[in-house]
Length: 219
Image 1: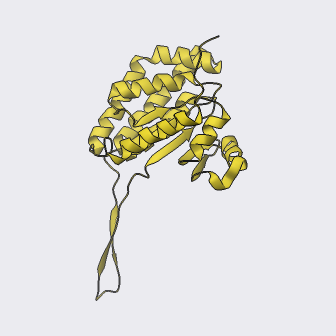
Image 2: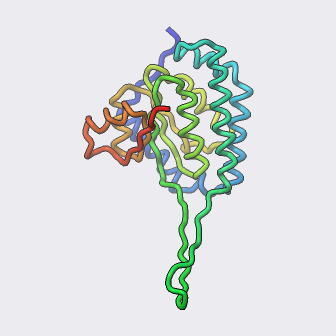
Image 3: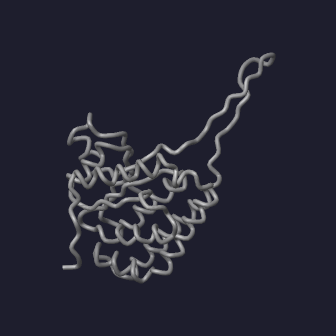
């Protein structure tokens, strides 16, 4: 046995969603400038690099891959945070001239975070899957509830601690662990992203009750 991990009940999911909603509504994350959010994401990558051996060991035990391969996964996951750290202060709207030439009108668009996002990740290469979801959402100012696979939840818990250590405010990212019922309880409440198999399972459970979803296509 590697570890014992809690199974989140529906009430635990509700608590995590409420915490993320409070964190979004009180603007503890989005009120930071894009540059400040980017610095925190970069710090996250630095901490992942500092703890690379620990993360690789956890990922190796969790997934069953060689440690050498897991170390490459850690590097790529950290690079996701570095990449999106650079985008955090470059998310702009646009202005456009519209209307006839004698009555020019300026149209403006604004890009805003969608709010709280649920993220359901698969068991294979979970650290990279989490990073490719968390980093862009955090760069944009969203708050997140992350549900790792019940088969490989440990790196999500370690990454959650790293995010806090890097300066992400409490409540901005929550991690809920559990089986399919935990993921279904999460998907009912929020916009969510998931892999292809989970996407169709959630729709099959009760599509009309699930929130807006995006599926992640295989590479």
